[in-house]
Image (tube, rainbow over all chains, first blue to last red; front, side, top):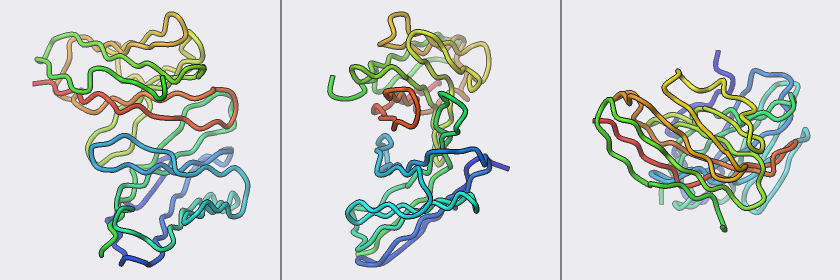
Length: 112
Length: 114
């Protein structure tokens, strides 16, 4: 079982719709969770991070964390064609200084 | 500098050759990470430095891979006797290090072994 799992997609949504991206993780001790966006041929760019159970909103983006279910999601409201990219979920454990563990990413396509 | 800088941006080398990839982290960031990303996959962890020392090198695939960070800033990833399977984008990231701090990535070095 992979440590961080994401559906590779592609996930296609129409412009203006809500895109929902999901991620599950295996390490119950994980403490911090990150969403990165990666355009084709570019490096990952941090969108949001979340540490506590519940929702965290930043503009059109909402991160949701449920530690009991070991589940983190990213919602993108009013999706735009410019949101089309691969979204990477990354998890950091509580065990001191540890690196981020990434999922394989979900490819999102927003159709105009 | 303003962001994480990686050089070269592209490197083509022949099988069996030695290569060095350089990463210059964000000023003041004590933690530095190397990842490798193959097409269609997420970044795969290689090695992590906290200051000058390698805090975790468990992701290095074999002893052909080695990385240093002698002064706690710039890091060099070294690959000996390159193989075609080493072809990938090598990403470097840095962060303030301690605790739950986010990491910022450089643009990567695309390594092609022919």
